[in-house]
Amino acid sequence: MKELKPPPLLLLGPGPSNVSYRVLRAMSTPLLGHMDPRFMEIMDEVCQLLRDTFQTQNKMTFPVSGTGSAGMEAALVNVLEPGDKAVIGVNGVFGARMADVAGRCGAQVITVEAPWGQPLDGQQMLEAMRANPGAKLCGVVMAETSTGVLQPLQELGAFLKGTEALFLVDTVTALGGVNVEVDNWGIDVCYSGTQKCLSVPPGLAPITFSPKAMQVLAKRQSKVQSWYLDLTLLQKYWGSDRLYHHTAPISMIYGLCEGLRIIAEEGLANRCARHSAAAAYLARGLADMGFGFYAAEGYRLPSLTCVFPPAGWDVEAVRKQLLKDYDIEVGAGLGAVAGKVWRIGLMGENACVQKVNVLLGALKDFA
Image 1: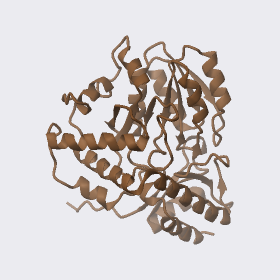
Image 2: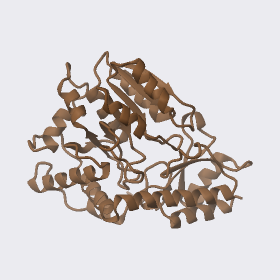
Image 3: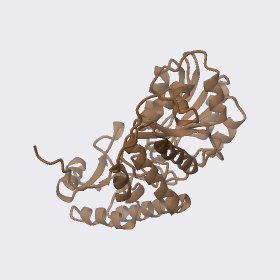
Image 4: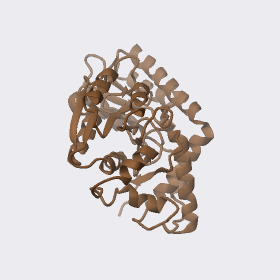
């Protein structure tokens, strides 16, 4: 058989992003058993580093085994029961997915929609919550990966603090590259994924539950719909009880630990500033070449830029040629904008001027 040897690529799509050699090295170290006390020390370190990155003191903070979509399902199936009301903001693919998952939990879903490329209207979200005073949760996507829109959260979080409703936020394309303040913003349930700004391979979904969310979980009238994602069971493994639940993805947890150490060494504020600076540099370079921007100005994600290629370019042909001839991956449009836009990710290791220059240099060959 041929040796498995994928080519080295510059991954500038919506994820996964390139990872540090330190992460790959950590993942290649010897396995420990998932109940080994030495592995549990690593688990504890991961939990604390995740608290630092989420900027929270929440006790229930750990990675779920699975990608970001597993994080979404874990968040929703644990707090929603049949008949609950859930107000969900939808302005892209992942807001729609959140509403879909909430509906699969048996919830009555009230959607608040905004045009793709635009943020959700905070006042409309507040009005929907006021119109549904018994709503169990209000869910939004902070970083809409399908459009590159960054959603403001503070106003909604401040309102929800004074209610019984939970504030649930998707930070899959934000955590580790865009400032996320779980405690200060009143977020009760927050999840992410490892393969984007955390610069770790896909396979884990960090999640955190506030004490308010924990109370909701404790008062459930029915079992959580998923045994595998039941956080009351997972907490007994990740917490002090250390009760077996499932075999943890040990090498992935090694990698996440190292990736989070890298973030701690750089400093979260410095890392977020680096992402913002790289995104601004990319935007200037693309604008000079005639690219248009899909997300509304003032609401653009630093970690992912959604653009219209210049007039006359074959959107898909050029994107495929970048991959084939230049070893550069940029993302295709998703959903309503498929075949119309590119999604360019600058996440983690790739959020730097040097990587942007490689892309801009390649694009000049098509101008």
